[in-house]
Image 1 (cartoon, rainbow over the protein chains, first blue to last red):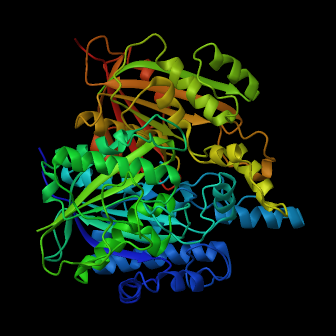
Image 2 (cartoon, rainbow over the protein chains, first blue to last red):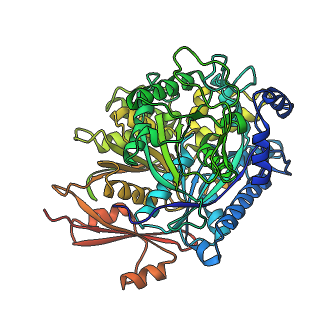
Image 3 (cartoon, rainbow over the protein chains, first blue to last red):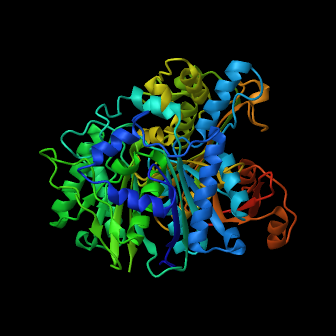
Length: 385
Length: 244
């Protein structure tokens, strides 16, 4: 029996489109099928990567500037005073954590043999930093479940609020550029060669990575009339392979279906499915098959969208980042469309949403889907009344 | 939540090949190219559940303070070179896949995750598992703390931790069934400081080892495991002797 609802009362995001809602949502609205490739060409002038628009003196300054900024903005949006901030339980999700700091210090050490080779060993310091920043009385917990890290962090924060274990939470997703991840994905031959992000499209040829940082504030009471709240989630392990999902799509289908069952919802109650949609060959098959199975089971379709063509694949932070992006857009009265899709593969039974969905003042239920290395698969449903 | 099985490995630094051999005696999973951290994790988890029955809806919670540092150093070395090419298995080795290997070896389809909380990683992982078992999100929980020795690092680069030069893979298996349990986890509490914990428990508390407290519950009715971080934030886990 749930004691409370977990409301998202504050959201902020720093991504390739900007670092305020006033920058991000108009920038997103302005990109459409006709100018998408021009946008990518301009943004990818240096490298095919969705980078932040700002430059920083060092990786360390970048990391803390991003964290400070998104946390401050989320707390402001939730209108938390100092005493309320102290009540924030802290959940962090990331794949690379602070490896960019270690790349910087290791390279410096190799050159000079002076100082420390590693800025940090282990990543608990990120939690400590957030504890200090917010004056939280709670101990921060870091989740490492690859691309589902921050959505799993959000799911736990929500469930703990629902059960009255905590009253407020800060969930942080962070993924910043680092050579290790970029070269690692390259060595796994997962990156797009065309440099055009096209999830589910027949011409889709891989992932384009991105960086971003976001914060979500959760509370057991709403702060605004249009606050979204947590409905349910499901997290399972697909043991098919370390780096690929079961191509049948069954484990991903079971996860989405499990989230619907846990929320006591039918698919026709869902206004939008935000697919993981990495654009990798395996994801294009496995997630499309999972969606086909879902649509077959419920004998209805729900609109599907993909957000990575706007901000890139931000890996462990993608959960928090894409949810923050969706919520910022919903506040502005629309839900984002899918870019880069022209024609699906023969096995794709759906067409991703090609135009933004107008949703001003409407009740909404959105299913968010995320799939990770290590078979970690999570679906989460948020709603607003 | 009731603890049914435990396994403790705490050894001075050993070679990776030793754990490969030990693991080969337990299962046929192919971890030929896995790093020592992952081998330690899988070996410890499988040892905890060897010849035991368990549900496939099991949560696997791997707590670690440092993660696979040896692989991280190897990758930093590769990436700092001119071409920056990273070997795929080395890259996968720094991505926290130990819990996946355990899930695959045990054919467990519940959830699995790697968790870190500075100086309280195991206790916070236990708290999460306790939450999942209590609210029936999983039937069983397998919770472990895994650290591979950091002796290979120059002392200057090592974190200040008593057990930093030890290989560690310590596990408990728990669920809601009291029958034949070794101990019951009655409560898991967090406090801003040890003073607040003492005030709450009306007693003086001292820092303990979870594993020693688990042993001591055989002799006495109740045992408190206390862990605090350097800032004084404190967790208290109440273990009681089960009665069935």
